[in-house]
Image: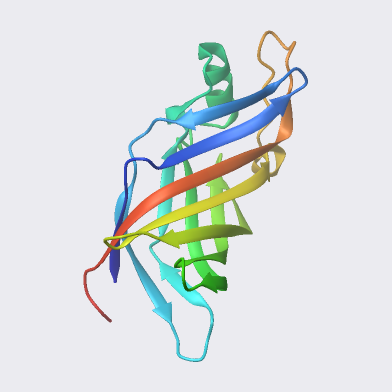
Length: 181
């Protein structure tokens, strides 16, 4: 079993477009910590995760405009479902670059938003750093309507947010072995 904590320097953004311009909303929330179990069977390339869940408070996203923040938070259902929840179920390493201790993995994830859960894959890039740290980068395009969200129309309806948004995550993760099964 490994414990993990997301370190300073990590960031999560939601980016999208309107009929007028592009926008980026940055999460200013506290970074989650916890533990997860990794199971890798001999002769099998699949890595299974248990309890690898990331919760991101919708109210922590700042789009740089108070009215847009309000519209985005309301549209994403933050009143009844205050978090975006991403659960890592399993991963398959795709490539490993031994000299740089970096590679790619395809993660099977469950994303919960606005009370609706969808399963999907997300490609991540990782680099091993010093002192049991990893830098992990991944992004996932989502359609808001897949989660029952009507894209907001800020500025009294003059701007219309497009259905597709991209969640982008760059994490510095500290890991440590806390027990074995």
